[in-house]
Length: 278
Image (cartoon, rainbow, N blue to C red; front, side):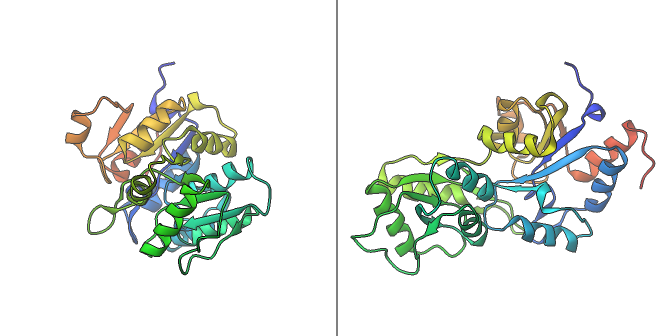
């Protein structure tokens, strides 16, 4: 189906690098969401960032002048905890390398979290080790995670992003922590976040949408764009985050549309959707 961008009914929107850089919103953020409302386009915000809860993202957006319910925010931590809850009963022991977003999601789905203040001890075992982005990781935590994985725990990662965009440029992300543990154990993690299909399926479920009328907006070729394509969605790449024009020129991954940033995308939607500037 040859679909024009203004015929899209739903969007799955990445956050870091698309809506903001660190704690700085991108220009035109409020105007973008007002435009979606005027065009009656549904959306879910889907991020690989597992450090915050959905409620924290709602608060962050409210501080930028954008109000929405937490049901429209999908994090890789929530998707990971949901995935594991389908495979393990409540009370399952889990060791978490991550921040409050991942810890809270795992507890919400009934997992019993092991303490992470020191090395777990040689007699400790866990059913699953879940690792995501954290700025507070220490060697004892990594050693504990590796020990538990080597003694039978399922190794799961929230997302594969090696870096994440900030105000000062890309910094190490969850994928870097996963690489440490994979090197230490020789075991590859199961990845839940983008480009894994389960993240997109959950977004579509929340939107009551079909892939053919939905597009993924993101700044990463290997997760947002590749994952969206694998899930059957159209894709929109913004050059405001990780991927630059030269990266696309050297890649076999081709998005359906490209824009410099959210402002340019908003202007295009308004012009072609016959919306007067809100």
